[in-house]
Length: 315
Image 1 (cartoon, rainbow, N blue to C red):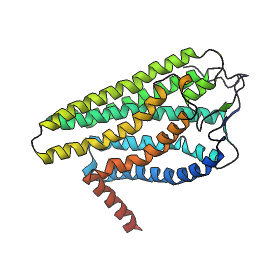
Image 2 (cartoon, rainbow, N blue to C red):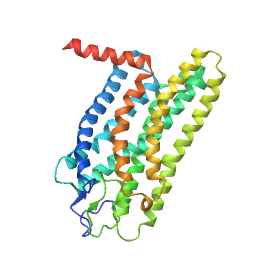
Image 3 (cartoon, rainbow, N blue to C red):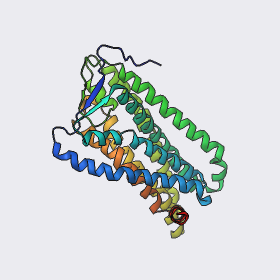
């Protein structure tokens, strides 16, 4: 693994995240939105994790994967939103070099891991709908832990290798990033010198980390759709649809912005596109996920209701 060279003369001590500095009228509304949605996202995802662990009805592979997704969402939004709040709420728009590096690594570890985890969750739904008699055998606890461990290890490997390679690019003393957060495409765009190899590597890696899992998800849901139409009972079809629809919505919310950002060369990305995508991925998706995952599921709603009642009763 290549080590980031902090002593390079071209390496700035800090970065200036310009964000929406050219449109200061946007900063206060965005600050207020983030100040409201960040706690909502944290509370919602923590509630799902607690309910999944405390309620015996939710001790299933689906909720095991869902707790991992909620944990990812919490880490994902925490890696970016506090820095956004600081920059939007003050005249200072800076982040230290080490702070930028930490944000970049965490942001991409969580993003890469989530890509793969959503594919694993779609496979779980495929087995539940298309192979119900073999579900407990295929999705046993040992397999679930192995799948999640592999997903995390792959996400970490992707992020560490790609982010480290990006930090090797010369910045020639430039420290202004036209973004709200430190992100690989923006750093590549800001770098000087030859960077075509980095752009190509990022595109190739993202094909495997984004496009391949998405194809697996679509294939899983094609099989699920075929199986659902074969179910004679309308109640059975409704139950199968309810089981899968929430996950499919989460997939589209995550993959839509990710594909628009990472499956095109960084030099072709418009100026404001990364900013709005960072806001969407870091704020909107983690805030909506807990509601999407529970509103269509009676067991989850019941478990959350019991959790809330238990908290107030203990007080």
